[in-house]
Image 1: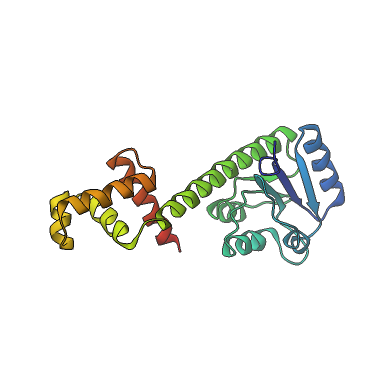
Image 2: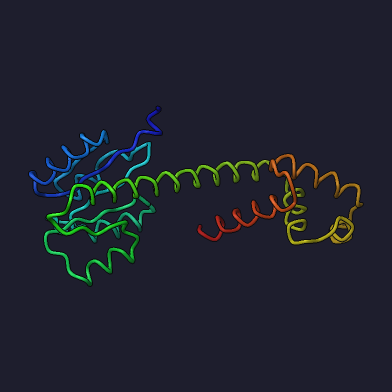
Length: 209
């Protein structure tokens, strides 16, 4: 197992006893843990290479848990968050969950409930990282296309036939077929349907920027 595969659970709670208790629980579950007393300490830490999640107390000195959740989202950090609190209320829970929290646990919580939430969060992060890796690979393939090949790809996935593309670009049908072959090979697409799916993902990626 490489560093890219080893999961890390970050714990941010200003109560040293709570941190020690969660660390012990994670150790017994054979999970790597890094704990911090404040949000600021956590923000200064090195981002993990492998899957990770954040067990976060709502009431922290300085930057509180909900503020940290917002700061991370604004910075584009998508780490799954499990909130823990000694005095949760419904509006607070709703706000946290709407902002993407995995779970909101009120102290004292059962060890198994926390471990279940952590496993769910780590699974979610593994999936997200795999998707990001796949998209990066797709973007790399697309970047290898020439300007004309990208043009042909756009027209192909829009449903146009080779002769229509040839007319549209003012070139011959045989030239379009050659470009189309290059597109399929460079994008590693096994079929037109697969190429369309790739184009849709790339379009979504552009829309997120």
